View (cartoon, rainbow, N blue to C red):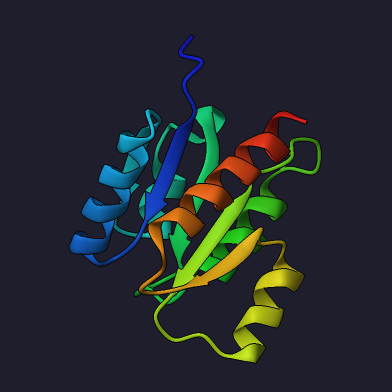
Length: 128
């Protein structure tokens, strides 16, 4: 079993997926990239995921809906911490993200260091 954290990156923008994937790999973590929440949910990596970084606004299921889906799938296993990102944030979206259980909501374009700190916080939360 690989002890290096695996971070799921879910975004419908290929450039953003590539950039976040490269950032994650630059801090010696592994990344699995998906173009939609549905593609992620259909994958077989869920049990290995330490953290999820997901766009909020995507075609199909949103990042906030993904959180609800993950919580609804199992009442015995805590889903991985989820970091949401969005180019269009509003106070209403921030509140909805918090209520849904997101660790945080970062506004695109975000400071790479802010994402790294959020990932580190999520991994610490996941292992506690």
